[in-house]
Image (cartoon, rainbow, N blue to C red; front, side):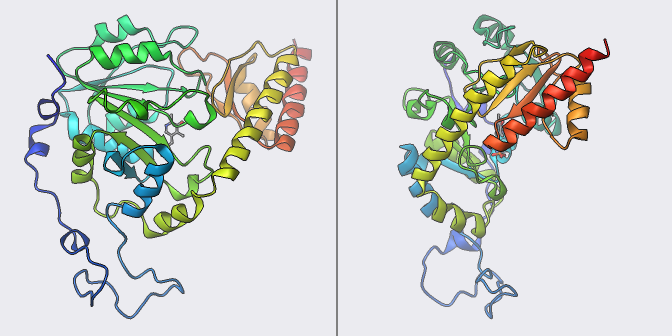
Length: 356
Ligand SMILES: *Cc1c(COP(=O)(O)O)cnc(C)c1O
């Protein structure tokens, strides 16, 4: 069977009549607006926040599209990537019937969002080197499998997933393939968003929360065929991206020079951090990373994590996660922050080995 969006879609979504907001029904800019029960007198804020924002974020999509080389019609914007993930479950997965495939260790929201929507997750672990095992993934597919989530570079392991393997999944799986590229800006590989034309079953997610430094604003992007984007638009909350976010992002995203400069600095710092970690005798392994964090294996990671907190250094304890025994995930910080973290980690590990 080939990919067919209409059969993949939940039937009630296919026939759903979406809410039509005031800003859907009249899109002109001029006139006396008495259609949305807004406050015509103004706002309690000094800023003109009394009007509802553009429900489809046209200006923002135009600018982002130019930067990402993606047609605005192929872009969905969500209140963080998490909104896009949730909408995909609601559009495609029948609760209690359908399933999705995820590849642990990976981003936790796929499973949580599946759980909220009462959708089963089939887990096909990445290999011990965190590679995708294509034949196992394809073997796990059954007639109820709607979505395969691939995170590349992967969180928490940091590595890129092999491109050939991703291509194989895209061509052999008839459901939706979601590639989460939250960390793509740190990687030297091109985005799969440039492959939308070849793959009608592809959806690529990116975010402004990481390299762009705009996590506060909550803006996630999904790139896919016009048809898939149309479905997400149909079921999203009408004004899902606030006007404040739209305006602030519009103003900020022209600043690509600073983006590039920060990425370069973070990558430099990552290299330094990797070397510094590898020099600590107690550190057993530092996994290669194409993202802005490093996964490091240390003895008794949970205790190390706690003792780092006592020193006001907060990293992420991933030691309970599959294939991440005794691993800490450490975000690359500023030069000073990294130096302080390394100093604290050395103290903690030294103390620990003195006790043995
Ligand atoms: C951080 C992260 C995101 C970002 O989510 P937002 O809701 O856009 O902030 C998405 N996917 C992965 C794998 C991440 O690590």
